[in-house]
Image (cartoon, rainbow, N blue to C red):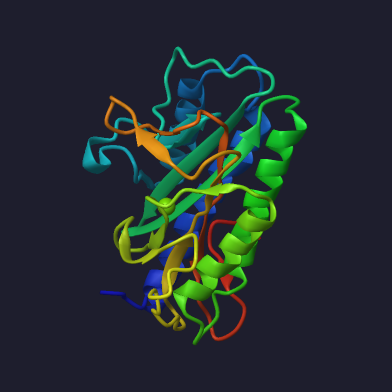
Length: 250
Ligand code: MG
């Protein structure tokens, strides 16, 4: 069931989204060669705690950390670890959720570690563009396939792989609500967007093939061909007109 949020829910989810944005603002500052993904997890946990919110991911289906930190060919759900040291030329996707007053904000961004090569730059730029192309379709009376189609168009233009197994989702009272948002046009995802729906849009695009594999830790997803992958996500409030990005600092 897709829920519309009340005025009070929206107040809270805006604040949850703001806290997610604060974490990303700090990630952008601190990510550099030589730091560990475990350090990034500690930074995120501190910000969420200071802002009187709850780290949504910690304990979610047993997930052991505040953030997901996925490096290079890792697509999503990587564990932040003491022995994962970021190096010049890596890319790292940070996904984080914060729960404030019972409402969840969810947002991800892929960061360059130092200077990255042109292909990785192209991947990051296109995946961010795909995110905003999808968001631009989050208007009342559009259908979710319009969002998927917009994302797919950017991926196809850049000849990038689209991860099919994961996608966007309703977000709010829990992290994953209905509906599921495909990052491509399905021909059947005809859910109609209405004001006060809150939905996370999150394209995951690959420099190589679409296919991904789940690693033995039961969480980390990697590209099958081991080429790099990027992941950009915002939580969105559908309004009467322009979509409102929740996971952003205004
Ligand atoms: Mg999400």
